[in-house]
Length: 426
Image (tube, rainbow, N blue to C red; front, top):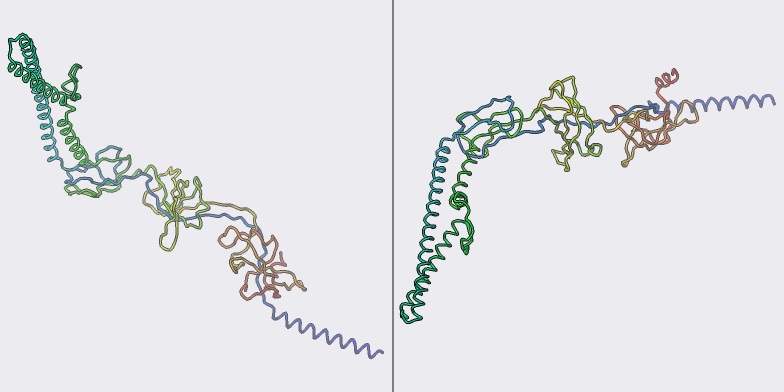
């Protein structure tokens, strides 16, 4: 009996040794992984882009006529006011043409006055002739009744009276037309002044129109600033010959600047009017300005391989005057902030079929052995080295962050020894 007990003890010992050996060999084959414990972190979502500082208001003065530059009154960098003359073209020929047009205008006015006098004289003569023919007709008619005038005499007086009436009507219509009356006006109302008749005449109106047209052309020979601002470029020299469409001067309002940039379409949904932005530029290194989103374009453009939307930002303040039109800049718009939310390293998750997963480490049969569980997660704001976890993990969960490509769900793994030592020391 005693020998049997000894035999059983020896067998159990041998089995134990074999089991421990097998387990030891299997454990030596376990994948060693580094891990990360889910902790909280603060996140800021920021939309950034490169752009350019530009004057919100600018003017490109372009010639609309042909001529030779006779004088330039400004230099690049000069401040100018709206309406100020910047340069002029040679106007000698135009001045002579204007003098001739003025002389022709006065001649036309004199001709109209003379024509009025002639028409009125003709009307007076026709009226006198009509009245005389009427008296002769009436007297002959009475004499004809008593036999003192023949039928032929009455016919002649009747014809003369009719002709005189037609002549009076014609003279009255011509005068009415010149005076601006209706043709059938019997001239029983007072006429407008001769001055108005002259100025309203078609001939004088045509002469005035020609003069006005020339004055417009003369005005075009003086290049005027349409805005208050600073002359940033003079594109011509004195003596230059300009043609229609030739640019001459550029003026910018440097007191009213904006930033023009393009935002990728994927970031567009985060933007809205009146959002604040930080503005940095190589032209003022170490400093930043603040701007406000003032305009978001209604369309998306394709530039290169990207689809972008133009946005504009007003420059809020620039007390030191460090912003310069034409300078490149970078803008940074904070569109979301989250504090103390779960986070994991960006390399800890992977994507399959459009979904995101991590390998969750679950405690196995032994405290130092973990089982891999594939866990779907929903992510949020992406940081520099970490990413927000919206759903799928809790604070304190352990996930594998190395060798994820060789891991499979259900694998048994153990942690790197260095990490175990660090964990135990905490």
